[in-house]
Image (cartoon, rainbow over all chains, first blue to last red; front, side, top):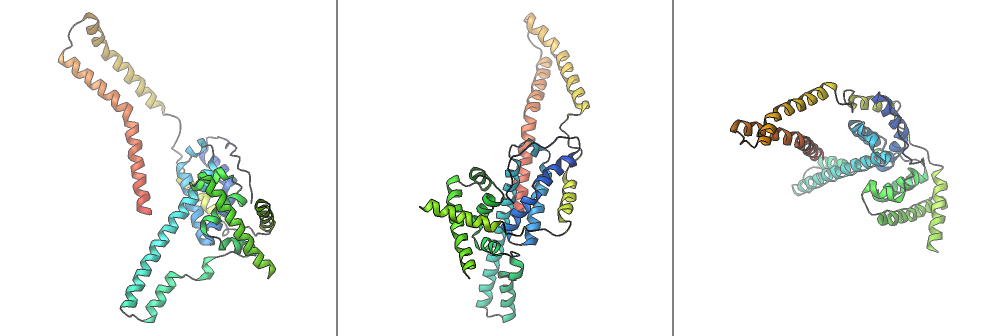
Length: 193
Length: 122
């Protein structure tokens, strides 16, 4: 999945669709893989992917003037993912409060079950990760997984990751260090049985 | 020492990454998304300024130039400017200021709208 990040210029034509196709075909796989490893879920990855590209299309053709288009696209994906996490936290907080209220009022088990279902969705929907390395990746905390995927799979440099995620370069390096250590530990457990 | 260990860990992980099965989306998903994006691409959006705007712009400058002639004559001869002349001059200055600042105002308004929409979504 490691790909070059040289943003070689898109061939300019009079047809916007042709120009968009060049950009889309060049980066679609990498963006999808990134979305997948962020969300750990095929359905959510597809939503994230689609929303990202719709935003890119909206800004087109201004995007062609950008120096680092790929970094910009990944920044959109990352920000959209952060927004979705925030919404999920609000949703969970709502259901937690509701659960507390219901427990105080001593409601039936059926209601508790419904709330638990909302708090803990079916694990089969959570992760579509198959192999050991994929499972080890899925176990990483969000920020570690993001940085690891951007560095080792999407091929970005530390400075580029720092721009995409809007964190200092030093943080990128230290988080990556921890991610590698954790992955190694998770994989060691698997391979030793 | 720690650096060597880190490098070893990284090499181990990189070998395992080669085994990873690349995730694939649903069939035709990439093409469906492409079609959706096409609807967002505005074919009318062009970086070329329409000819009609250039013509109107040039005519406007010629008109202003012609209107400024009485003023320049009055200023050369040292005559005081009449109220009507002052009024016309003020309107011309106002138009010039509006021309300069209107794009900035429009841009800021659009940004404000976009920020508002983003806040609604999040």
